[in-house]
Image (cartoon, helix red, strand yellow):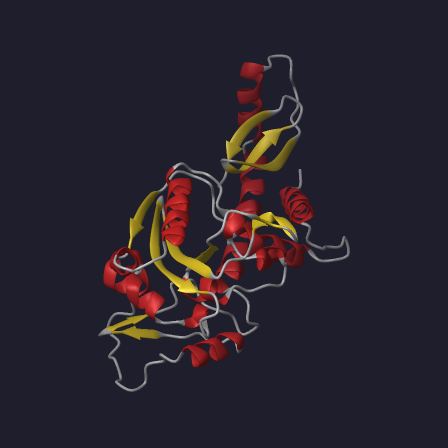
Length: 291
């Protein structure tokens, strides 16, 4: 029983599936960081309720763009995978999506034709749909031109979220902090420069001050949320192994109820649509899920 090694094997299998490079000589933290960096940016295909901002609802859009937005909305409502609309760079192990890492905002390409250079994705499009996820809800923020200068650092995106659904970013509000007028960071070029430098940006909108809703960016210009998730995974798996060893007889009894002649267990960590689970490989019985 070595759940940490099982976790590494899960990560390596996923990296192979994504076509990302890794090596047996790399330490576990590096392997898990690459995997987590991709996993957090993917959108789980589950049915969601869609909300549309006033800005987007009242925008004058071409019929084709409206049709594509409706298509994306139907995909979300029906739990259909939308990851083909994400950036193709999502499957680069060292790629930091600054918009997502800083503000927790995704962008989807509004197209349906497959990308001839990368069939996993739709063809890149001149128009992008910006959105945020919260639980089983998805919030359509705005559609903007891909060629807009510093489009991924336009503070208006965060302003729209604040104006329409302040409750979904309320946990990031820094209460008790006074707004110093003139100190706000609004210029998109400055925002992008600070992100690349690994600077955590505190944003002011009206009289409200927010920490980064996406978790922020580390001094190494990587996602702070990836580091946080990696630490959480290691903690959960380490504790689970000790807990399972202490309760192995209980799990054996559970398996024996289904397989009366089985006297030993071979417990391994695996992953399913329920998350990380512990399975007995002899009976192929899931004994418990830990995430």
